[in-house]
Image (cartoon, rainbow over the protein chains, first blue to last red):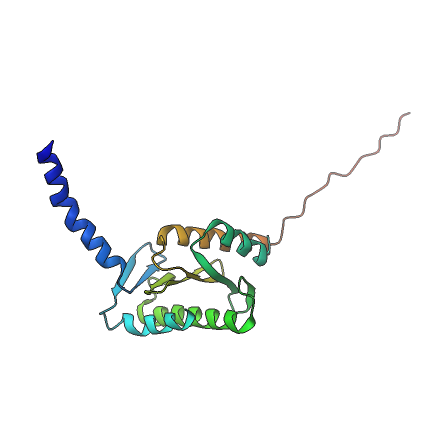
Length: 58
Length: 132
């Protein structure tokens, strides 16, 4: 039982921390009519003009 | 269902949507949850600009942009185009993107359904039978 708990913390911990880090980051996600999508992180040069436009609406 | 009713349903269903506006293919405003015209205009212009910028940069002849989500620290902006209609929505920070997109598309489909002309029901002519 303790081994199982340790394994869960070992695997789930980094995943949880990564999820929390990404949740706070600014990003742009685009969906296309063919079902594909792309995500532009805030440090991407393509994301900056789009994020600037979005800021106008807030 | 007109745009105002569809938007009222949207804000009732989705607590994450703070404001939303529906526009037609030409960008003309069909309805908004915002009380003032300047605030609505700002939301629509920012959303339309965001969608057009994304389309010009990433759209191609093979595929076109249908949904844009810009996640900021203070909230998110969603733009969805479907059936010749568009919706721009502002949400609180950290929204559940999938749910918001589903609710926005449901709203757009309700508006699109109201805009389509209803098929005319055929009524069968009554045939008068003369009793002899």
